[in-house]
Image (cartoon, rainbow, N blue to C red):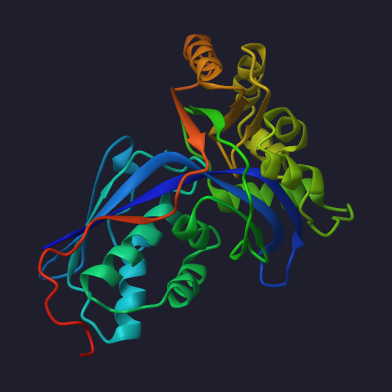
Length: 309
């Protein structure tokens, strides 16, 4: 008896960041686009809560209760009065500490899988509320496709996307801490007036029309200067992708993964080959967007009795 959920990575085609709030967070206008790189989370009944992980850089993933997948299982179990006796296995394909919400994806995947395994009956709204408690990017990992995130990024408004967009992602040789990047953003912004973050109308129109050239002209990431300050070598990767013909290049979220929007699949292959040959990154992946959110791949084999019946 087990449940497997597949969850996508994300790229931020706009990340507008406001000034630090009294609670330490920042208000955001965060335009998420889910991309076709996936983690899979499998949940199986066990004697106690345990976490294992396999895949690229799996050794960097915490296997204790600080893992977002474990925290998701604990949160749902507490709400439903269930003993969280499950084994969580994460098959990683989303870069670790890469600014593509791999940890958030695992949290959303575990939450959906546990809800299915335990027949807990949590509604979509309740799942989203738990996701928001877990982290700013976790709700989007659940819903996928495209959305505008406001507040910390957890309040989502679905967006229309008029076509498939082609992306190339270059993974760096080391990770970047999201809190460290926000701290560097605050340091660089010290003494400046930071405007309220708002979504770009041009960018939203480009997504809706499926216009890659217009989208390339409108993408932005307010965290990019901070990421480059902490990891200056990323500038070489960005330059290599642009030189290879990418329509635009940007740091994905808090980094250090760099993202390159290209015109089509053939262009993606060319840019990916050039980046691999450039010596400026560790690995390169191609993917299309948008991609669906968390989806159950294998249901419970024995439905049993619904929780609470």
